[in-house]
Image (cartoon, rainbow, N blue to C red; front, side):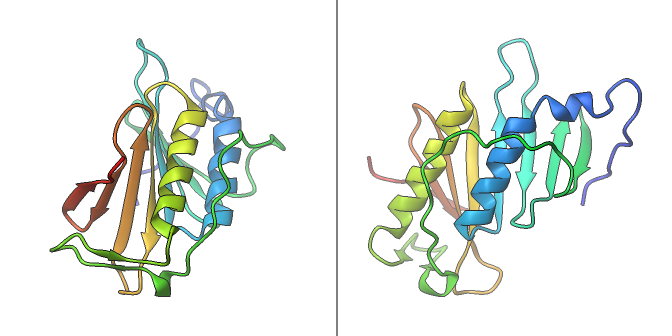
Length: 168
C-alpha cells in the first residue's frame, strides 16, 4: 500500500467529499461485477491534475491527487446515489482463462464483451477523458485480465505485460 496522507485542515474531507458520486459509482460497480479492482483516472478538467481512484469489492477506495493518497473506508461517505452505468453480468473467474503469450482468452460467449462494455460505460459516465479499468480474476490464481477504456479510444485488454486492442 502507498503511504497515506493524514487529513488536515487544508485538504480534509472536502477534497474527498467532492468525489462522493464517483466513490458511490465505483463502489456499486465493484460490488456487483465480480472484479478484483476498479480503477479510474478521473479527468478533472484542462487546468487540473487527474485524480486516481482505486476501489476493491469491499468498498475501500484509495484516492490519489497531488501526490497524496487517502484511504477511504467502506463506511465513509454519504448516502449518494451512484452515477448511471451499464450493469455488469459477472463471469465466474473459473470460467476465464487468459494466455499472456498469445493473448488468447477463453471465456463464456459474450463475457469479455459484457465486461468491456461496462468499463466503457463507466468511463463515459464519469466524463471527459476519464480512463476506467477493471482487473478481473481468471482461473489461474494471481493472473488478472485487465480491461481499460476511455471514450473515443479503443478498448484495451491486458494479460500480464501484453496489451491488445479489442476489435471494434
